Image (cartoon, rainbow, N blue to C red):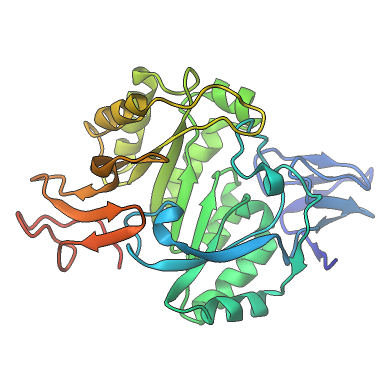
Amino acid sequence: MQMKEAMYYRKNVDGSVECVLCPHHCIISEGHTGICRVRRNIGGILYSENYAQVSSWGMDPVEKKPLYHFYPGNVIFSVGSIGCNFKCKFCQNWQIAQSTDVPTQEVNPEDLVAIAKGQRKNIGIAYTYNEPTIWYEYVLECAKLAHEEGLKNVLVTNGFIEKEPLNQILPFVDAMNIDLKAFHEDFYKKLSSGRLAPVMETIEISQKKCHVELTTLIIPGMNDSAEEIEALAKWVSSLRKDIPIHFTRYFPCYKLDIPATPFETIKKAREIALKYLDYVYTGNMTDETGSNTYCPSCGKMVIQRTGYFVQIEMEDSKCPNCGRDILVIR
């Protein structure tokens, strides 16, 4: 297995190291890993054990990330590794995110970019499936090479990363979908073993540098109250009203067996958020209205989505009815 010395860590006099890639700041003793399970102290040097280790890849509609305002109707080469710096009890990809005992293949950055470039009608690379920020060294190298080859880079991330590494990689990132899992710290602590405040900071920084969309998985009794949805939407709108957000339906998964989210809960969350935000979507459910994009001024449908079939009903990213600019990168 190819390993690479990790970026963003400090050596301690007792032989341990402090990883400063993410806000956990794990103190890692000799032979051990941090919370992410893929950054190991060997002889007082921190190594990225998942460097160039690919667990899964494939072509996806960009809407699957989900990104609704970034090259709609196109496809993107998606790739993932192993590990995560969260321990979400409802993890959707727990087989690769919550375990490192997963078959992988070694693919160096040059080969990955060449494979991506060779895919038909591909717009770029989406680093997804598990948490890409703990694959930092590899993703950074690939992202730089991808840009040189004219490919776009997308991060699908929990947003739990320190400011310095975030700012280093952002010049090579074209779009992000950031999980805003809830809008209270207790949820992050109990269900994800993380913290909300650093994620909010990542969103604040990133939305100034690249295209950002947000996703919140709505879990009954955990983050579905009208008050929390309203507070979340108000905060996002304080950054920008045109940041798209996706409220997605939860299904029992991994260690959480709460019954699936009712359809009406997701629709109600969308109604509340639309008071403050221009573009609010529903996901993991059949909802024609909640899948489409409407002009925030006159309400005309400007992008229709049926599953992953996308029909754009405007030119030059302007509403054909009232002329308002619509946030769409294409």
